[in-house]
Length: 485
Image (cartoon, rainbow, N blue to C red; front, side, top):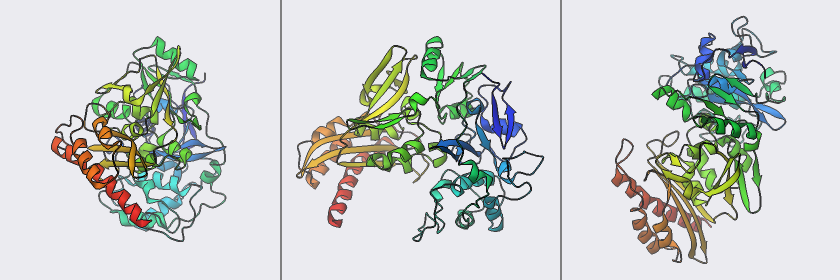
């Protein structure tokens, strides 16, 4: 096992002596690379964004992440590029091989000449998110651009997790849409044709990255006090804002046994350590309900780190995925040194942030049974359209045959101490004709589900009203589709 190190802007940097709770942002800033900033310390502003070389088929992809959340130790053996590395001023940060020292990167140039930077605090984070989209292989010229996609194929959602409070977004959009195709000799583009660094087996004081699942499970058996992390998008907030210091951290995000996806005929099995961005890409629209979740789940920066297992494992009552997975009747596969066991998701949550998972177990995968429901929808009520925590989330999975509801599964978030199934509403729908009178009666039942509370996001009365309205909205959407036909 070699000494833990991170390749930062082309230079190998030692992790020796770095405390386990130190995040990547503090690590690179301590190196003198102060472009990345701490704005919110919880992954909402993107001022801390950096690029990481992640696996993509036989090659790699520059992937932006929130450096304020991920432990530096979790990047052992990995390749990181900051905004300084894109500019690559010789003698300050080194740089990726072949980068042109002393010259602005095309993204930085367009941001400068089009007035995309004012105070500059957010600019390095924007630049890293924009650079990832600049190098996205699928980005091509678009003959029919819209408000969110430029004529160069640039997807503005690539910057959805970056906030600016003084420049305004129009010049930043102009800079994004002015970017051309990377030249053939661009070293960052060429780098994507090579494999990403393999996951390192790491041991540091208070931190471990096991080499495989068997080693991870043995560690958990030896250390029942261990905290399991993958993307650390929840754990990182606890460290930054609440001063949490785990006795021992076990990173499982790169375990190969947890990073598979099997589209079997009986069930779709999704590895727990796949990031949400990876799951979205791999499923390629095959689960329509989840396609409605992805755009509303935090930001691209968060989805590039957050995992499907982590979102379930935190057992938050306001997590976005559980309501949708409950509507799909998903199950959770738990694994330990004693073997696997499969638990219906509806039985997985036992209390506020409590589950049936034992300290020696890991979430191995999530299984979604096939066939999928014929009528699905995900409704999230929050104060912002994107990148916000839900006040109420509702996942619908219904089958309507010859005008009658033959099966109904409804998952709810934000209205109880755990994500729950709306069983009374499901019973009120099943066997009934799919028409307005049925919807109105069932909406009244749905408004009474759960035990909503008053808090800073919404009142209990508002949450109840939104539950009933979610079913009415589903009815209106299906009626619109019927008219469109």
